[in-house]
Length: 126
Image 1 (cartoon, rainbow, N blue to C red):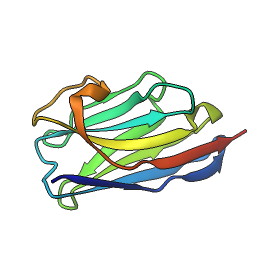
Image 2: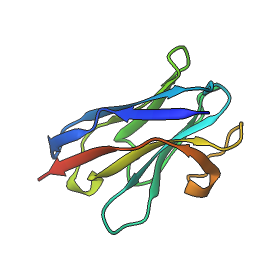
Image 3: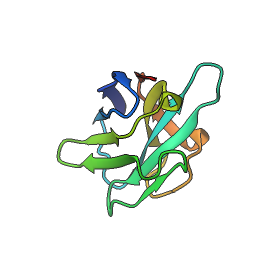
Image 4: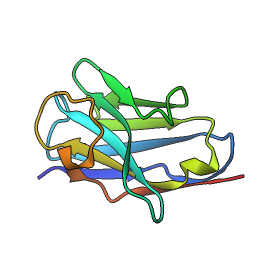
């Protein structure tokens, strides 16, 4: 059974940075698409970034391009999300997710991901 545990959330001022971590156990992330999603109160869950833990292919939502960077450490079975130049619009619960089947897909659709963490809260104040 795959288990995902996020950490690194917190409260920061606009313009600040945070680094989220997602430690995966029970299954290797190598060869699987790993993603970060976020959900703000009253809004639908949206994809933020995805990475293919083999070759390192990535895709980002337009709203975070140039500010967020997704990466993996296969040796640690961990996925990261470096978030810079944060704005209040980035405030949300952030979730790590693993695609249900192995392989690469740049599509950030929640229905493609069958494994989820419990989430870590990010709050950005103006």
